[in-house]
Image (tube, rainbow, N blue to C red; front, side, top):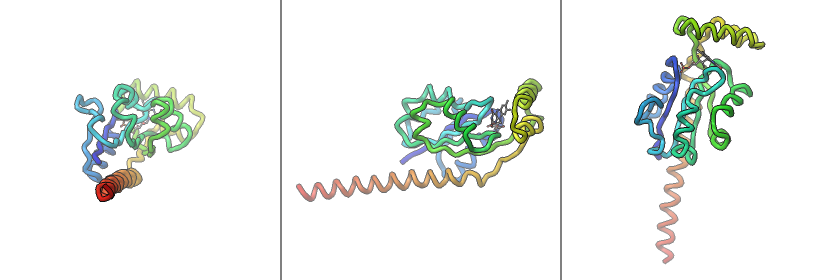
Length: 186
Ligand SMILES: Cc1cc2nc3c(=O)[nH]c(=O)nc-3n(C[C@H](O)[C@H](O)[C@H](O)COP(=O)(O)O)c2cc1C
């Protein structure tokens, strides 16, 4: 069973996680901005997306490539400031088609925000967000930045990939066995 990683990010964190997955799994990786990023060539997909202003940055690519995505096992990893929880779930539901959201396996990873790396207007947007935010921790992150990048947080995804690969290997063996059995019976 052949899988691949497709990712979308702005500031390098999602790309960094994608590189760690390549190291760990050996799967091919594509930035969704690459013209060769075609999901229809693979049996299962790992989609990685950062969250910017309450939306997944991969959403347009997913909509444009839905035919090659929707009938396959999909793992989605999000990279955000927010931790896993209802807020993040709502942003995913708002960004992706409902049928896909219901069947995918989601793993929430937390990224980094270095205020020195962003433009003055992005800092302004973040200040406005902080002003409107009633969660003190999230407010602090928007005003001061944060760094949650952690290589070990990819472990749950490595396990899911192993499960996909071993379940496919088992079903291939079962198909092989059925064929042999039915040939014997004829
Ligand atoms: C302009 C801007 C908006 C952001 N909006 C959100 C948000 O709505 N929710 C969230 O959890 N994190 C938000 N973040 C944090 C990013 O998700 C985090 O920095 C992530 O690591 C970015 O990944 P990337 O480097 O792959 O783009 C925002 C960051 C920036 C710079």
